[in-house]
Image 1 (cartoon, rainbow, N blue to C red):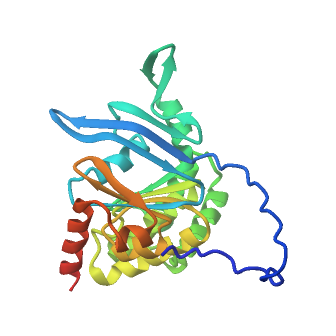
Image 2 (image 1 turned 135 degrees about the vertical axis):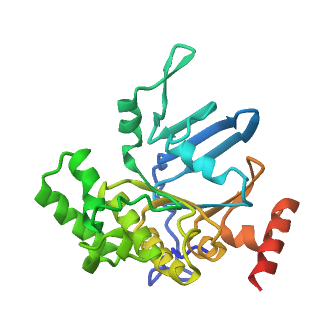
Length: 284
């Protein structure tokens, strides 16, 4: 069940009263749309015609066995991997290519950066600069990419570190931080760029079990604030309680997707049934 539940019925909207027809709401433009994604590494095809749409403020968790293509999908959504066929649109703009008549041509690096500027990404491994403090790790992109003045960048960086619970660790170097703290610095670094959507690639899999909770707590807070999120994860509890939609992948294909309450309690595909049974056995 998603953590973001519907609001209670207003007072007075009770049985016996004439209900006013709900007003039509404008359709949300999808934040991310992937269609027909294919990707191969050499002779091995790892993605087979993957379609995925993510709406604003939606939290989508991608689950599945190792090697199922989950991380490759995420990297294609950010164009960290060049997809071989299909399309990825970010807020309506084609990512990675431009179309000339019936031909598709690679986009310039500048255009790629423009289209994916609304995306923030957090990796399994933290990728922090070891010779920089936590604050410097968060503010470097603000100063280099956004050309933000130092004082303004540092103010924003400190605000983001406070947001992830690390206000008192701004001057610490990565070697002095725990794995959970390093990952929270990485999240702060991505948030500092003010993305409209966050992509998480197994953000807790490199952490000791006792440190997982502090990272998931930050992610839950972001979800509650309405951040659009696509999360590749092995944390089934997080997917069950925070996601609006869970996507199950196997062998480079989306096998099944839907609300977590349906997917976990009533899996339709035999492959998902097997996957969940194995997960439950390991959790005992």
